[in-house]
Each structure stands twice: as C-alpha cells, then as structure tokens.
Length: 453
Ligand code: PLZ
Image 1 (cartoon, helix red, strand yellow):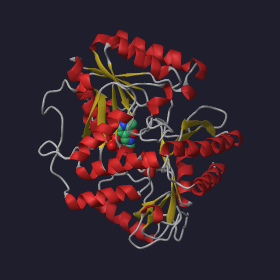
Image 2 (tube, rainbow, N blue to C red):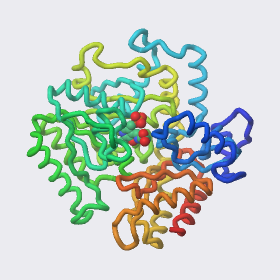
Image 3 (cartoon, helix red, strand yellow):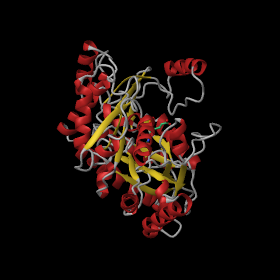
Image 4 (cartoon, rainbow, N blue to C red):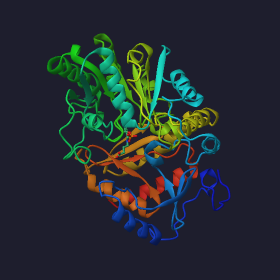
C-alpha cells in the first residue's frame, strides 16, 4: 500500500500516512471555501472544508498538502479505495472509446455484464432482472414504481429512522425532518411509517425489541393501511443516515415473512450497506433475507455515479417497454467502473477485509465505551461501525458531544461523519483498503477526542 507520490497520481500509490502541514482547513482550502460560499448555495453543506486534490488507500490529500485519514469513504462509496487501479484502468480505456450512446438508444455490452453480475451475486437463486440508474434515490424511487405496477397497489411502508434519498418520493420515504424534509412539502401520498426494531432505544429492552417491534409494525399495517393495499415495504438492512441501527435479529425475517404471506414486495435498500461494506457482499445475507427487489448504489462503481434495481424477473418484467429508463442510467464509464469494483472485491478479498476492519474497530471501541460513559452504544458490522453518544448514565442523546468529537478529529486530520435521528452518532466507514496502521491511528485520535467531552 505504501509507495511514492508523484504529482499526478492519487490512488493507492499515495503515501499512506497522516500528515498535517497547516491548520485544518489550511489557507488554500479556506480561500476555496470562500469561493464555494459565493458560488454554491448553503443548502449544499460541507462536513469538513478541506478541498481534496488526491485520494487513495486510506487517505485524502488536500490543496494545502495535508494528508488526512479517511473514515468516510465518500459516505460508503469508495469501498475499493479512491482511484482504485482497476477502476482507473477500465474507465480510462472506456473514456477514449466512447463516453455515451444512451443504452435505450444503442446498447453496449458493459451494461448487460453489470446486470448479469448483479443478478448472480445478489441474494436468492431465483430468476432476476436488473436495470441501471444514476443514484441511490433514483434506484429506490424506481423500485417503488415497479412494485406498484406489478401489484396494482399503492401504499408503501417505511420505517422509523429510515433514509432513502432527497427526491420527492424518497424524501417522503425518509423519516427525519431536519434537514431532509423541512419546508419541502407537500410530500408524496400513500407513504406510511412503522416502528423499527432499534435495540438501544427499545422501551422494554433489547431482548424484547425484535418481536415487539415486528408485532407493532404488522399491526399498524393491518389496522391502518390493510395489507392488501400495500405494494411494497422498503427497509435498510442497517439504517445508515438514521445512525447505523442494526434492527434486532429476527425483526427483518418476520417482516419479510409477512410480506411473502400478503403479496407485498419486500424492497431492501442496500445503497449504503452494499458491496462488502458490512462484511457480507450484501447486508441482507447476515440473516438470510432474500429481498424481492434490492436497490444498490454508492459502493457499486468506486465513485462513478451508478445505481441498480435488481429483482424477481416476474416483478420487473411486468413493466411495459419504455416504462423505465433515463438518459444516463448505466453510463458506459460507470459500468466499466462497476465491473472493476466487482473484480476488485473478489480478487482482493474485500468481504473478508471488511470483517477484519470490524475485528479491529469493535473491540477498541467497546474498550473505550467501558471507560467512557458518554458512549451509550457501540454497534455495526464489518466496516460500517458507529458509536452513539449520550449524557453519561442516561440514554439521552448528546448531539453536541458528537459534533465536538467530530470537530476535534477533523482538526487532528481524521475524517469522521456524524449520523442519527438525534445527530448523536459518530459513524465510521473507512475504505476497505485502508491499511491497519491508519485504522489504529484513527482510533487513537478518536479516543483522545472522546476524552475531551
Ligand atoms: N438509501 C440507504 O444511504 C444516501 C446521503 C447523503 P443517493 N445516503 C447518503 C446526503 O446527505 O444526501 C442513501 C442511502 C440509502 C438511499 C440513499 C440515496 O442515495 O445516491 O444520495 O441518491
């Protein structure tokens, strides 16, 4: 992983080290931030205003020459790393051959190859189809379209703490008002929200959580909507933006079973959890869930914009010719990147690598939680790990502490992200190719930052 730096080469050849040569952000980033503020509306927020010039392995290099440890991976996108060699090679070749035809006008092989691979790799050995779009939100929105068309029903059921995107339908599916929905209504009709099995916050305790939450969700569906009116249930196997909430074991299988019994399309939103992130290729595998439709994006193409809807052939085949699509969906550069990502996950053993990362992070975070009462919960799987901060001795969320710790980490050259319905979760999503020494160093920075709150 360690190599020499040249002026034009990012990727894994960047020195794998944390190196601070200015304050964070430095003068060049500060100047660029002023330009951003004059040119870009404030609605487009910034977690850490260092302007990146190169990235790879486990580091981000900024305009001032600082090298930061990356615990964000562009929000679970660069699982194979930034500028990953196979991605660079395949995309470079493709960009010289042709950049776009529109697959719906004149097709090309790489689109079909990506769909074939997703059909083969996603859970379940039934016959599947896949089509490609540009973003996670677009994938979820299309999955709902398809489910409504196939069932002839309208209602869509989603969960507390869910996040599915920022378009009209997907922000409606999203739970949290601020910042995602506030002032953006009216929302799309026929969307219903039910409880999620959130073990840390379940009133009668984590051991009762799965059964009680499933019973409440199913009761609400039966009594408030009517199962026969429900086209789809949409769920994240681990709630991402909501705070890396792993539903209590048994909850999702029960919901999936209820869907099966009632002809409801079970849609797994694996936009954040997919592509080896959680220590399985897809997070549904952990409890053996076979979704009717699975939505993927983010980690699929190493940073190029691509997303996919994969599902049962009998559901996807119902939609008429021309009913699905989009100008850029399955762009040839993005498809080449996806093929490179799938090859890299396989040849570089990134599923195992994600488990290895969890194996380093979880014990250290649990040890920190033993010593620090502000850490209420440590959770996650593989390289999708989070801690939830609370007022010591309570479960009362402490978003100010999360913000303060994140700020401290940023100043020390460690990029961490916050999350959670209450904004009190610190989440860690390192690229799966991050070297162990950076992972350890990042955890040490975090530990020191936590000691200050
Ligand atoms: N479904 C589960 O995590 C995107 C959002 C960042 P897009 N999550 C990051 C932000 O603040 O906008 C996400 C997700 C899940 C859907 C989406 C939406 O994916 O590619 O951002 O549209």
